[in-house]
Amino acid sequence: MSKPYTITTAISYPNGRPHIGHAYEVIATDAIARFQRMMGRDVFFQTGTDEHGLKMAQTARNRGIEPRELADEMSGYFKTMNDGLNISYDRFIRTSEPDHHHASQAIWQAMEANGDLYLGRYEGWYSVRDEAFYDEKELTEGEGGQKLSPQGTPVEWTVEESWFFRLSAYQQKLLDLYTSQPDFIQPDSRRNEIMRFIEGGLSDLSVSRTSFDWGVKVPGSDGHVMYVWVDALTNYLTGCGYPDDAERMARYWPEGGDITHIIGKDIVRFHTVYWPAFLMSAKLPLPKQVFGHGFLLNRGEKMSKSLGNVADPMELADRFGVDQLRYFLLSEVTFGNDGSYSAEAIVARANSDLANSFGNLAQRTLSFIAKNLEGRLPEPAAQDVDSDLLKTVAEAARTFQNAMADLAPSTAIEAWMRAVFACNAYIDAQAPWTLRKTDPARMEAVLATLYEAIAHLAIIIQPIIPASASALLDQMGIGEGARSFATIGTDWYAQLRASEFTLGAPKPLFPRLELPGEEA
Ligand code: ME8
Image (tube, rainbow, N blue to C red; front, side, top):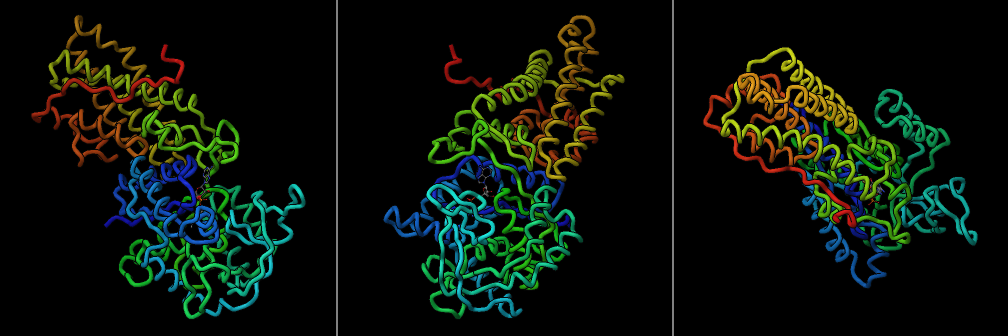
C-alpha cells in the first residue's frame, strides 16, 4: 500500500466571488496533488468554503439576506471555479455541513477536557475583515485616527463575554515544534516571522462570540458560537473523518502523517500558531508542513474592489484557456514569492512555451509521421544523439519530480522546458524532412526518438496542464495505465508499435493567443 498523502488549500470566505488569488492557490495545490497521485500515493485533497463568522453575517445583512443564502450562492461560484479549472479535489467542504459542526464540537470538547478553555470577558481589538483579534502593540493609525491591523484593515474595540483558549500555555511547545520540525513552516522567511511573533509572548485567545449566532454552537454554552477560526481550521479534520471514523483518521491524519496545508502568507499565523496549539490541546497529530505562498498582484499592484482590478479567474480561463492560465501561474511565480499577472504576460508565456515550443514540436512531429508513414509508428535504430536526447528528457523527469516533491512547481517546469528546447534543437539538427529523400531509415529513427521524447514530455507535464497533456497522450495511443513516471524507461514504444495502433492527423493543442487589438 502506498503511503497516504493529505493536502489542503485554505477554505475561502464566500462573502464574494472568487478572485484570481483563490484560483492560484487551488491550481498550485491541484498540481501537487496530481503529482503525488502520479507517484502512486493515496492522496486526499480537500478544498472548500469557510462560511461562518462576522464577515459573512455582515455581508449578508448589508444585502438583506440570510447568511446561509449568501453562503449557498457564493459557495456555488467557488465550486464552479474549481470544476472549471480542472481541480481534482476529493472533497469540497462547506463549513455549514452537519459533519463539520460535529467535528468542531468534538475538538472543542477535547480542548475543554484538557483544561484549556475557560469563560471570561473579552475586551480588545477585532478586525472583521481579517476575522482576527489583535494586540494594541500590533496596531497602526490610519486616516482620522482609525486604528488599523497589521494587514491594514480597520479594527473595532470589542467587549463581550467569551470563552478563552489557553494559548499562553503553548508558547514553549510551539517553539519546540519549530525547532524539532524545521520544515513545519515554509518558506523560511515565514518561519522567522512567526518565531519573532511568538517570542514576543502569547496571550490567551478569545474563541467564542455572543454578539451574533451565525456559527457552530459552543457545546453546553447557550448563546455562544465558536470564533470562526476555531471551526475553520477544524475543516481539515472533518474531511479526514474526525471524530467518528477512526479508520479514515488513521489513513489521512495519523501521527507522523504526510499532511500539507497550502495557504497564503496572510494566514500563516492561524495555521502555525493557533492550529498546532489546538491540535496539541486536543491530543491530535500535527500536520507535517504549512506552506505560505505569496500574493498575486495585478500588474504589480494589490488587487482591491475599490481599485476595480480584481480579476475573475474564469474570465481569464475562458479567454486564454484553462491550461494556459494554470501553466502561466505556476511557471511565472516562484512558489512562496509574490507574483504579478497581466493579460500580456499570460499571452506571452503561453505563446512562447506552449504554442511555439511544446505545441509546435508535437504538431510538426506527429503530422509528419501521420502524413509520411500513413500513421505507422517509425522504426527506431538509435544512434548516440538519439539516446542522448532520451537521456536528457529522463533527467528532466527526475528534476521535475524532485522539484514537485519540494513544492517548487516553477523549478519543475523550468526543467521540463529545457527538455522541450533540447527536442527542438534535435529536430532542427536532424532535419527529418531532408532525410525523407536521402536516408528514409535514418528519418524513421529520428522520428521514433522524437515520438518517445514527446510522449515523455507529455507524461511529465500532466500535473500542470492535465487536459492538454491527456489529449496529446490520447492521440499518441498511450493508455491511462501507462502515464506514470515509471513508463519512462520501459519498452512501451516497442509494445505500441507491435499493437494495432495507428496515428491519426494530430489536432493542434495550443492555439496562438492574441491580445485584443493585435488581431489586425
Ligand atoms: O483567509 N494572491 O479566506 P480568504 C494569492 N477563510 N492568494 C490570495 C490572495 C492573492 N491576492 N488573496 C487571498 C481566508 N489569497 C480564510 C481561510 S483556512 C482554515 C481559512 C489566499 O477567502 C489567502 O491567503 O480570505 C488564503 O490562503 C485563500 O486565498 C483564501 O482567502
